[in-house]
Amino acid sequence: MPSVVALIPARAGSKGVPNKNIRILGGYPLIGWSIAACKSATSINRTIVSTDSDEYAQISRGLGAEVPFLRPAEFSGDSSTDYDFVKHALDWLAYNDDDPDYIVHIRPTTPFRAPELINLAVNAFVKKSDATALRSVHPMSESAYKTFEIAPSGQLKRVASDSTELDPANNARQEFPITYFANGYVDVLSTRFIREMQQLHGDKVMPFITPAVDEVDTEDDFVNIEQKLERNPNFASQLFK
Image (cartoon, rainbow, N blue to C red; front, side, top):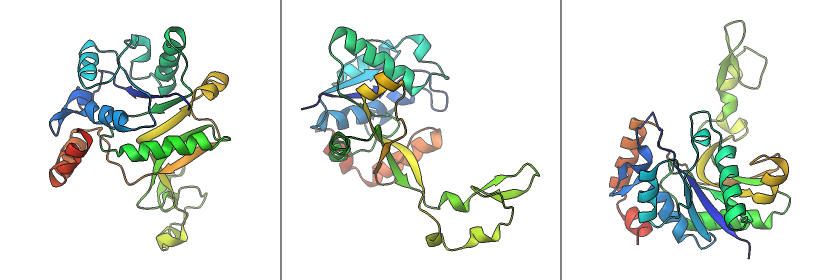
């Protein structure tokens, strides 16, 4: 069986919603929702939180995650990339334990997950030998081909077209290709690919289609997700057993 480590990034410097990763949602810190989903997913061997905060580390351990290191400041700033914190975690694991075969990247700003879907994503990627990574996506409510950008001349033009004629964008949505948002539900990464190519995803990324996902980036997002939880209070009891 392959070794699979869930890696949850939780730096303390959020500006849109201060301390959003530990803000209480339905009686639990936001990060607790991701930890609980990972611990209930049978495909995951270890759940590790990568944080630069002693407070976040203590809270995460109390929720059942491992926090074997604190992320250095150079990998915790606004300009730090996902590759930075994943590579740091892998280097720590290689030095102190063993490299896992796979990393499951779980973003705490996407709290509502089914552990069963995490398992499906991991198992699908493990079986897909030619894929470089797996990313979760959900269909856009409106095809991106019906959207616009501003041409150098200052006029609107259709995305993926050199034409400023907009009437074709009014055609029925069924006439356009389905386009997808990348979301924070679950990404599965190959340690070997990251080591060899110094990239996370590469050019043969397997799509994993999920239901539409709510993510928390602003205060309005937090209000919206609290209201959804009020309408479906059983979700917390199902996840936090």
